[in-house]
Length: 246
Image 1 (cartoon, rainbow, N blue to C red):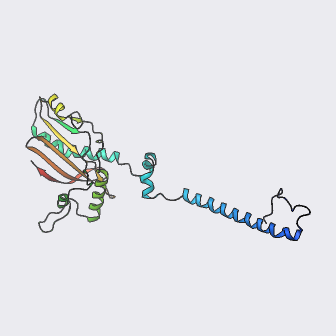
Image 2: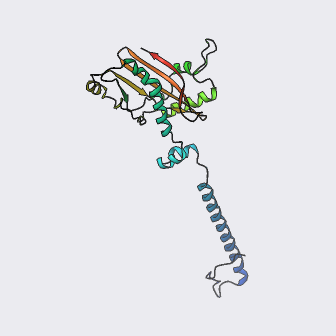
Image 3: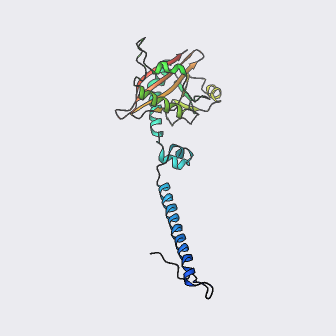
């Protein structure tokens, strides 16, 4: 039972009889109980808030260090996907120069492609991504749910430009935007190709979607949408479609 504090003053002598002081003590006791209840509620609310599951909004406003533990880290996959695209799609184009001396060199922009102000893939890309029963086109990604996840991830990750993932090859040079003319002049004694890549978008079931372009002169170039598959434990090109050829 809750009682009054030991130092709580008693009734002033000679002013109030005990019968008048009793209601005052009762009211003070009730106020003390109510204050304790409020404190308990405040403490419980603080504990619940501290242990609450963060919402998407919480993750978006959290610090980068907090986000790194909450959001997937795609950097290792990014490097693997970019390396496979270069090895299996772009370097075979560079090899068309043949065995020249000095050997052909690939210049790769060190910033990724972005989707621009809209942050959305171009509308005409859908004709490559989706199946078209009327002309028999199977689509790069036949499964509707997987396709939507890949597109959503691709748009989210390519809303702005990023540093290109690290790729080390002796026949590849990373070039900052605006310095291509300078680097081409430096290596004018050999054939040169130029490549640009987006960041990959990822599904939840082991697939990736990436955009890439390659050009080797004024009238020599191609751009692709490329789907990769990691269901076997390593990334491989599963499907690719040229978006345009010059």
